[in-house]
Image 1: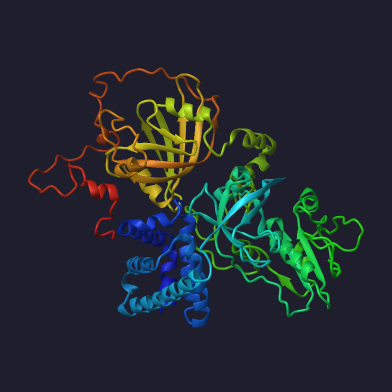
Image 2: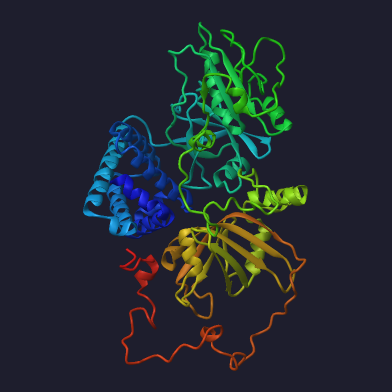
Amino acid sequence: MVRSSLALLEPQAADLAVYFYAILFVRYPGVRDLFPQDMDVQRDRLLRALLRIVDLVDSPEHLARFCSRLGRDHRKFGTLTEHYAAVGECLLQTLARYAGPAWTPETAQAWQRAYQIASEAMILAANDDTRLRPAVWEARVVGHRHLGNALAEITVATNPAYPYQAGQYVSMETPWRPRVWRHYSPANAPRADSTLTFHVRHVSGGHVSHALVYRARVGDVVRLGPPEGDMLLSAASAQDLVFAAGGTGLAPVRALIEQLAAEQRPPERRVHLFVGARTGNEAVRVQRHAPHGAAPPLAVGPGRRLPRGHPRRPGLPAGGDRRVRPVGARGSVRQRASRHDRRHPAGTPAVRDARLPHPPRPVGRPGAGRPSGAGPPGAGRGLPHMNNRPAGPGSAGERLLQSHLGTTDRAAVFYDRQVQPQLTPMMREFVRQQTMVFLSTADAAGNCDTGFRAGPPGFVIDLDADTLTYPEYRGNGVHAGNGNILENPHLGLLFIDFTHHHIGLHVNGRAKVVSDAEQRSVYPHLPVDTAQSRKPALWVHLTVDEAYVQCSKYIPHLEPAPRPRGATANRPKDSDYFVAPAPAPDHRRPVEHGAGHPLPVMEHERLRLTPDQA
């Protein structure tokens, strides 16, 4: 019954997740601080967890194991026992809303029983784990080395020692993106000095990876969640091993081979390693950038027996005393590795899923504006399709067109020089002088909207190099742009100087909508009177992801001038300008709640849902 009802709800998955978190945060506002500002990934995780629980609902043993792991992992978020009841209440109400007539008393009882089993397993596992180890480990960066191509080698030290095994992966939170956790695999077996080395590549739109590659410095502190994963070496097995890896997926393989080299006992196990590389330079880089104290690695090719008591700590298998050189053959790694009979899928869950022959069912938003089976964007238009997001700034679509039109080199120069991860001093001064800004938003399905805001110079306030905020006033009550931000926090701002320097500034980032009272409690210096004696009702708070110049070539010159008196006398009112005039109001009808006067303050500030929405 649970499985059949979820199949009915799956087409509405995106809307369901948005509604669930909306009522959860309104009813239990204290829970909001446990979640990141950008909820896109979190919504997908909720749906994946639901699908997994439903898949395991007929297997109590596997369901308990899965939920126990979730419960232990949720400790790092600050989850408390009382939070589970709040989540269950809002989840069941959300499911009932979207299931409609299919939500029978029997279905409700089945879901309630399934959630009770899952939550009890999570609570029990979390309580047991509390007695054994901390929820998080603070790790100080002790080494940071750029390896090129948006890749960095980062070494951290923990105190107390971090209890993991070679082949496991780690969730990491950075101070630059609080409450956003990403998985990375240590590239080394446990060391006596309690240090771990990670290989991190910046991916487009990856806020955590960008911070780790370009902002992290020696002395910075990150937080690690408990280790996860069961890609471990079996001490009882003497079977030979085959590894296939590429990119940062090589990290856990290095750790496993390093452990094997240190613990090798007769009978010695034979190791075959296959490393995939898209280019020759990438293959050479595998050899060139060995970890500190490691032997030059073997880039591609069959492994050799690891000598007992090997004097070196190899990052990858090396044999004999001769100099190791990259070897290999053209073709796919899968074709080469398939000749061997034992394979270990390497990497974090996201990386492993991408390599599985049959990956899990995709969960999330359907493609907006394209019929099912229409193919990827760009199909049939003379452009190749790009599935992988590129490293560094820019989207996959940008890189696709650059390659097609031959502008890749020019774009690379622009990315390197112009695209900034935060506002420079000159950018902040530019923002303070502007009297207008154009903005763009999109809802969870990708339907976009544009807007325009204006005010006195500096009405958009730079709180610091990473943060902008601007006021919102009472208007037509539609809240199109701010409503989009509640579903999808990505916000783009475009400032243009039409009068002096004829230059523009793009600022893209993640936004949230907060009440005036809430914003002033954190930033008491904000101006009270920012536009014609009107008091802000809300504030949009933007965390900057990137900022870059808008060239001046097509920016027209405008002369500032006061608006002429009586300029609108001979034209329709704003509300009638593009549509037929509204009929005269019938004064005999009662005035509905909210018409002609502002909403109650608390209702407005809390953005409460109306009864039919809740």
